[in-house]
Image 1 (cartoon, helix red, strand yellow):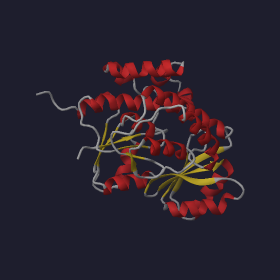
Image 2 (cartoon, rainbow, N blue to C red; image 1 turned 180 degrees about the vertical axis):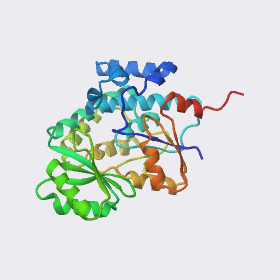
Image 3 (tube, rainbow, N blue to C red; image 1 turned 30 degrees about the vertical axis):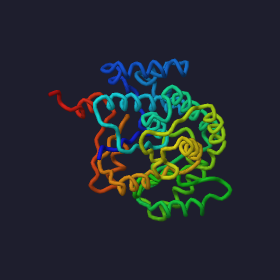
Image 4 (cartoon, helix red, strand yellow; image 1 turned 90 degrees about the horizontal axis):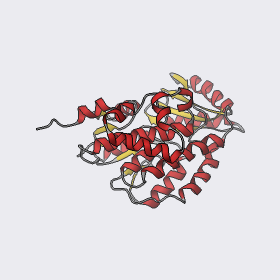
Length: 309
């Protein structure tokens, strides 16, 4: 069975990403030029030279990661068999959909730029936050969040791997939950440097705005199964994909369940297509015996390329 391809989400970005791909592959340069034209500003300059503060802005981060990931996927597809299945973490789901042929790249760039803006504008900056909770089961994390929420919102947002759950919500409620979760036995709690509380009910206004924007986007059936974050199951129909993208914004990312489902379906080889190596670590924590390789840099892609006979 061909490897499954996984695409990273926010948090994988770094200044300089994509530059090696552009320097060695004209195809990558074409994609960055397209993204610059669609957005009306130089996304490539921000990706390649920063500053970091500008790259960290959600409405910039999302199209930047998408462009880098799709560039890597297009280069990989020139010499590697198509994936047997595909998935992306949060934003990475859009990279997966472009690669699966369900969403055109130029429309995806525009859409994720809007998605980032909608998510940022859903909650005034400084009022929400997220934190990674280490060493507790997701059911415990969810229960404690409900107990301490009060009139505010704090919820499990990213169910990433055994013992790694990210919580999201109002800043004070997240802090109360962190304190209570440490008392409940969490090994640690790591504040995340994000500008909004993603994947919780505070994102409902963003979901409604994204639904309207998606109404103007043409989606087609995917060429291979796409494991969606919100349902942790494979889909191919355009209608299911559209509905999943809307619900994803304010719902938990069920990444651990998606990986387990892929493992049960026989997927043991994974390629992380895009910047960073966060997803490889989550695969190793979730699926014993699974193999992961990076496919996000020019060097990594060159290593995957079969030797010329």
